[in-house]
Length: 404
Image 1 (cartoon, rainbow, N blue to C red):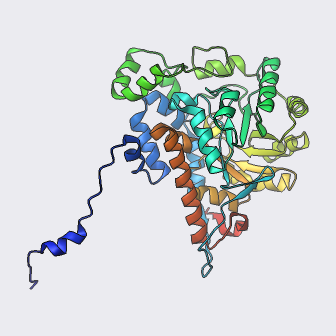
Image 2: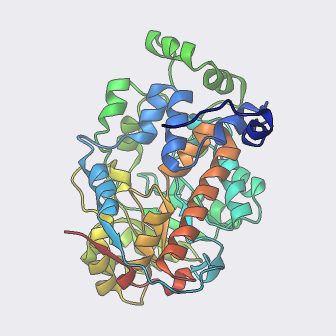
Image 3: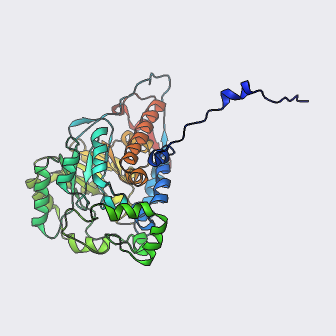
């Protein structure tokens, strides 16, 4: 029979570890974020539904996005043991120079809609963290203002080819004059994908004050207050627009773009030229033959053609076709540092993350984006150590396979 006695204070005292209360609400929120999924949960609570769904959702039945997540879940790692992994090197050569981490912030449109600090905040985090930042043609901060906010960041400018070629040429000139390192041509958006969450939510740019949004605003007052009391939410590269995202794309973007336009851009742009939105090996080879220095395997985060290829599964065939003639990156479905390690082990030069940092931005502004980098960086480091690998450059396909 167990003999019981009341514990003495001297025995209880060492067990009581009461933390001092955190008064800063942003710090308090972010202290509870240990994964990108945690940041997503916080972002969902703090952001109006239509805005969160714009970031979180994809096209039609969202099959492409689900498959992307599932492809990373099928990765099986193969660790080596009895290796000294007390220190690991997470750096990577990307476009000819060494970066502290093997990923970049993908170009995302309407970023100040997610949180009012927007592209400036993301660029500053990229500068501090030593990773590239991509500014979208559909960004809500100008080319020059981003350059001023983060003068030493490695900045990439992402371009959609518009029907008005002169306007596109002017954007390229401005990016070149502002010191952007690379030009990213996105080629998977001849017309807008059917993003059904946006359709059902009635999302417009800027968000309009309807009965539905007013009711939603009652539960997200901080978001609306920031929207209404900071600089107007508008596209930095357009004079003005009032309507849906799909209407804008179909009005402005040119569905007649061909490889000749890639050659035109190659003649305009003096630095590295990246083509984003490649979804088969033949197209990867084609754009490299016409001047691309790198390709990004991407189905636009599942936001354009539903049931498009899964990038992690496509990667080996593209590497075989392209060889050493261009660097190969990938995006879509990356929500952890382990996902990034898996892609690198299977041959990618680096990855781009979009939703991951947008969840951080919505959760806590610039500090939330910084938390995204901290989470991904620590996960990359830990995964390398558990694999018995001391450097990103030492990863091989033997370290990661896909379970059938």
